[in-house]
Amino acid sequence: MFDLMSQHRTVYAIDLPGYGTSERSDRLYTPRLMTDAILDLGTYIRTKHSDQPIGMCTRDVIDRPSLAVTIRNRQIVTVSLR
Image 1 (tube, rainbow, N blue to C red):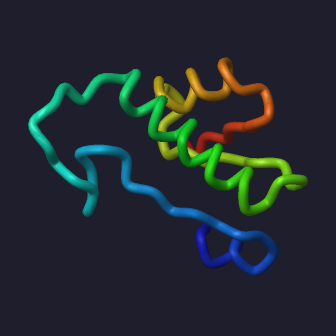
Image 2 (image 1 turned 60 degrees about the vertical axis):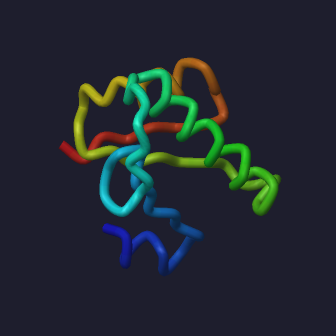
């Protein structure tokens, strides 16, 4: 999916806090922390691509942080891959 999408758009693949190669500090890993991380990324992307819509793909249909981001920020569209 990443390779296909990146042929036509700028694509960011992220590791949410505590996942993948991201930092694993001593803190609570709450849905709010994940939501804030996604929103922060959206802010960063908006500074680089101000006039482009932002789409977000998740691998789970019940991805609470992604769903919360979609509800809180109507400029981000979420698509589930399952």
